[in-house]
Image (cartoon, rainbow, N blue to C red; front, side, top):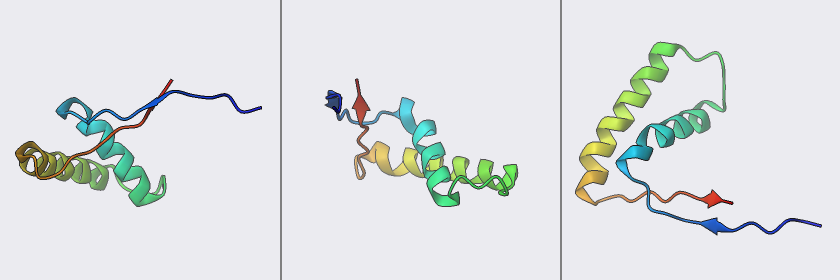
Length: 68
C-alpha cells in the first residue's frame, strides 16, 4: 500500500537559486558526466545572473515541491 505524503509548494527564494540551477543543469544534460566543469560553471553563473535580473523583478516565479 502506498504511503500518503504531505506535499507543500512554497515559492522559491533567492536561497534556492543554486539548487534550481543545478537541477536545470542535470535536466539539460540528462545527468551526463561527459560535460566539462567549465561548461557547467558557466551555465550555473548565467542562470544565477538571469534569476537575479528576472525573478527578482517579479517577472518569473519558481515553486518548489516539498514532500514530508
